[in-house]
Length: 294
Image (cartoon, rainbow, N blue to C red):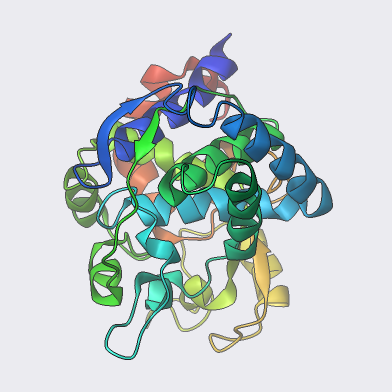
């Protein structure tokens, strides 16, 4: 099944990202809590069913939360730590100010603490919740190796410096991903996680207004799509408006993100950098289903 095999590549890339260096990851293994908290994953799944049932739009933010955690100091839950008087933490860095789902993580962690006090790390909770978010959004499942350790250091400066910016070009994205042990195929595949969720207007408004001296809007955007976005995002200062990253399918984990990007209907400029360089070379070669979207 071509579609199924393509969708399974994202979990594999997440596992590569999740295999972070110490202290975030020691010896990760599937079934790590089989003796100390045998129902850990079932507890998470049960609570996630309730969370996503009540708020389906949280699937994307919970997947994003795990990704943003892993890209800074590895998958150590440092994105959950609060700022203190002497330190501005990751969650308060500019790229993370729009992160959502912290309350859901606390809710799941509380259930685990009630069943198995001081046993399951917050880093593992994020990893399991990300997997379950994808599954509950009609995506594939995968075994999650566990045993991550929670970090005690959280820096907004590190987050701002290390997270991939929406405006990044391919050389910069390639460099950032390589620093996490990921190659260009992983970059193309992980970009497919944008099939879930929404984005705030300031993250893409510069493509709609005063783009350049010769163009009011980014010419790489489909003109009808650009017009539609402008009806929602009224200015670059609009901080309240949200737009679907995968129009018409933002609550479902599927391949439509790639179809939309190929039609020049993606929110972020980075989408087109990815498409221009290796969309056909990498993703098409590894996922034959995409041969039908051109």
